[in-house]
Image (cartoon, rainbow, N blue to C red; front, top):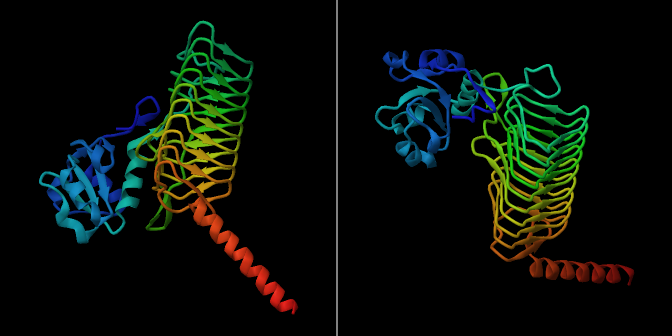
Length: 340
């Protein structure tokens, strides 16, 4: 179930309603009156939620799931466990996305005041002119909110922090002594789409951003909320200006990211990892504890703990430097040969 501080619950809906909405077929039509309250991924699903399976390699996860209902491709119709209602569709993920849109809705600020009457501002917090504090938000003692900053409904910010001018924060839980500089955007929807019957469908982003104590986030940096799981930034990590961190990323403690670093979705980064400027990491990779990524590197594979990688595609730094030196020598020899 998505965090109710950030998402409104629009359920329940019957399976017949959902089947009609997404163009699915109930394998057992007599189950159409069953109701579901929420969407959930396989390992988080409960009896009152509906999930989906599009990757047959995860059939074992579906069998272990407690989901009350599941969108499945017809070729996987028999993969569901006993008691799980099946809705057959050629596009299970698109069906899931459409169901999420009618079962959950992001909360918006409904107060006309700059500081909502339902916000909880501890003594000693400072709110600059023009800042907006949403319904149910919490601001800890000693934290300074800059002019024009927007703190969305339900957001919790700890003590002794600093939120810069025009920073925008939503769907986030933020620890103590966190500094988020001007123009940063925390908790916006991540990038995710799937083909549907009439074109691409946005996949609802139902997770949060968790920022632990002592983190610094530079100006103009964007950290997306999770799609299914949370996006997490570990304690005392330091992030430069203009960095992009996508949904479901988990960054460890004491990491460093220089400007223009881009981390794709569902990457896991170990404690103490370091990224040079303009480094890029492809999705679903593991960057080991203490690993170092050179400036401008393009990481396409997991990096083991403690190793330094560089180049495009990135590889161990000594390999990259030997290859670069060899290519330089070959190019020089060919140039000399052509001159002769």
